[in-house]
Image 1 (cartoon, rainbow, N blue to C red):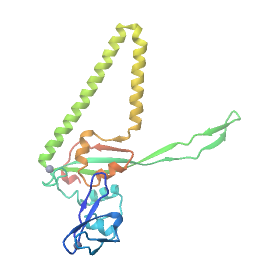
Image 2 (cartoon, rainbow, N blue to C red; image 1 turned 180 degrees about the vertical axis):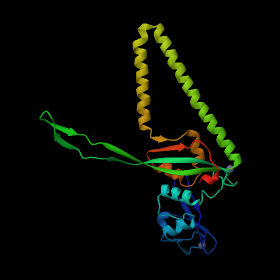
Image 3 (cartoon, helix red, strand yellow; image 1 turned 135 degrees about the vertical axis):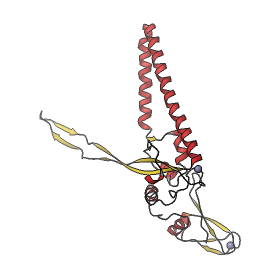
Image 4 (cartoon, rainbow, N blue to C red; image 1 turned 30 degrees about the horizontal axis):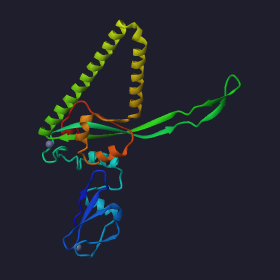
Length: 250
Ligand SMILES: [Zn+2]
Ligand SMILES: [Zn+2]
């Protein structure tokens, strides 16, 4: 029996089973344990259990969550961390960039809402404190020499674009200041505008909790489990660890 996993964008993963006639049937996880008629020879093909399907597709631990699978694979140096370049999947990796993926696990209320008598004789509501718990997973982005050159190049471009954005911001801030200085009557609405813009940026930032450098998505999404994790988590941060290390670090 041949089983291959093919992740289709935005769709459930498909598995393939060979019928005795040689035809390849496409099945999905929910069909596990049932039988399906072969479209070629019409004989009933038994579909193995979901665990067996996933194991046959190269998933050694189908009972784990995607985060735990990634964590375990990185720890055991098993696929996709067994030395092949993550970008081209052909050459041997020569460098590894440490990646830290932080996921918000829960935001829990640490103490119950209670009413306590206050000093002045009245009652005071004690507001519960919210507590966030982030879990961190470390794994390497492993690249061959050619892909590393491309990655470093994109990394540099990304950093330059951040500097450029800062210069533009500083420039427009200075220009606004000069304009307001020269036109005192316009000072009030100018500062109002700046204040509103600042508040809008703040509001946008606090709702945007998925943090990852734009250029890095392309590189990380080639690592198995990573796209699945990034898609399923509401709040995460990805940190590309400063200095690159050689593979012995992992
Ligand atoms: Zn058949
Ligand atoms: Zn490569």
